[in-house]
Amino acid sequence: MAFGRRRRFAKARYTKGEMNGNEAAFAKVLDEWKAAGRILHWGFEEITLVLAPRTTLTLDFHLIDKDGNFVLVEVKG
Image (tube, rainbow, N blue to C red):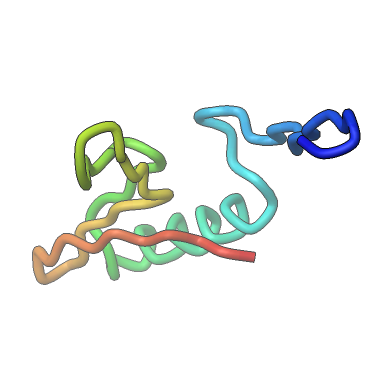
C-alpha cells in the first residue's frame, strides 16, 4: 500500500437465504408459473456447485418444468 493508505473493502449487503428485490420479484413469477402448471417445483439457494478447489457457486434458483427439465437460474439486476 502506497503512502500509508488503508485498503477499504465494500461491506457485504448479502444475507444468505434472504432474497433481494429482484429475486423476490422472480420468486413471485415462479409462484404464478407453479399455480398455472408451467413448473412443478422451484427452490431458492438450495444448490451449490463446486467449480474448483475453494471455488463454489450458489445459484439463486432451480426449477423443474412440466416436462421434467431441470433449470438453474441466476438473477441479476
